[in-house]
Image (cartoon, rainbow, N blue to C red; front, top):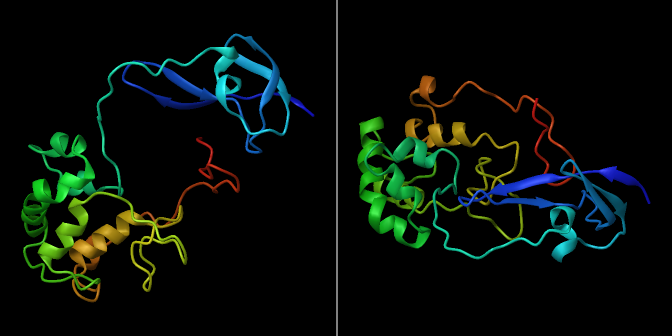
Amino acid sequence: MKSFKYITLCATLATSLLFVQCKDEDDNVIINATCTDGILNGEETGIDCGGSACTPCGEVLDFSGTYIQEDQMGRPGINTIFGTTGFKDAFNVTVPSEMQAAFQNKFQTNLLTLNPAYTTNALGLNAEDFTTVLSNDVLWLAQSGVTTYLNGTEILTGRALSDDVIDVSLLLIFGGPDGSENPGLTSDGVPANDATFATTFPYLADPF
């Protein structure tokens, strides 16, 4: 057993309700908890955290109310590149099942505005097929095999933290059928993350 101080900010809802969790990377419940100046103190039990044991200082979280979707982020940068002024906000509040019908034509128009010479890309997709895939803005995830955005063999089977998804997007927009066209436009010039990823969930590097 060890005593520690640990509190993680999980999400902020439109109602300004803050969610926090009181388990560490080992998924241990905090017991004998006390709260001092917003800091949770207690002991680990080795039991998965759940229920009121996970709320800050024993408070009960209130999930009542009406919530609305404010943002959509399946694949990084898609709405930034294709969701231009005029429908970016509408895209953010549209559920994925309705996205293709509502936005594929708009995405295709913007793709051909960005690259008027576009024919097919390194995936062999013409403008209509490519924007059909992109306008359904969900991150695909293969249940087995390699998880990658694009590694030259597997395609859109998920996203590894080290995947350079912006370069992949630029390559598919500007690189042409073999990825060699417009070399000055197929990379953002940022080759890697600037901090080491963690080895435990959620694996993101600490801010600095």
